[in-house]
Image (cartoon, rainbow, N blue to C red; front, side, top):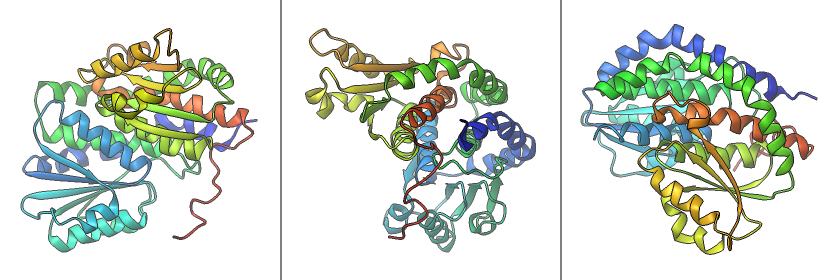
Length: 337
């Protein structure tokens, strides 16, 4: 049986190609405006929040531009927001996420430069931001976000790396153009191995998800919207550097830890955590996804684009082996609170 998510996974390369074709020049113009800003605020929720975390960590690896991340209502209630040479970028699949929309409206009231990235052309975010970027993912049903995650991440990288031009950002921007073809190949080459991996771990109830640098954002998405929403598994995201503060006390045989590793400078701590978990007296259930196994020639700052593909297959089949539809929901969109 193939669920809706299966087909949406296959649509990711085309969504990326279409977004680049239709929005690339627009994003270049917006990035020129951002290059003049002293502060950039990023706001999102769920998968959209994870893309904000990833691009913030990625850009701050190479430049000291002030970039900070908020959830929607955190931005609304924060007293630190300034309108002096500042911009807000909001990300939302639907363009209607209530707390993110509230943040956009506050920023407009304060006079910030506002940019929205959304997948719905008739949404309020598309209409109310001063500059709007439309991702070309088409309608997306699977709750955990595939096409919309990829295209949002693409747009954020284009905007922030385009606004901070140097030799590394130039390389990143050039390699972004090759991402659709790489994703297309990975979708074919990583399905079977992760289907088998999912079968092995189908009975696991709790996953700890660790990543460093831009992969913390992916670890957050993996735990929050992929494991919890997609396969109905308990999960906890952690910065790799926080392993020794808490998790180190409870890892033991039977505990499952999933590591995202791109061999970035920050991954020194990822490797230390892996080494600890592999000790004979500890020997947790370790799952390690390494950037170098999938796209060794790409700049590792692009690792969230690459590592998410095998993770999508893993979570898809994890849900399947637990008789769950990875795209359905029990409460999201049905319960008001």
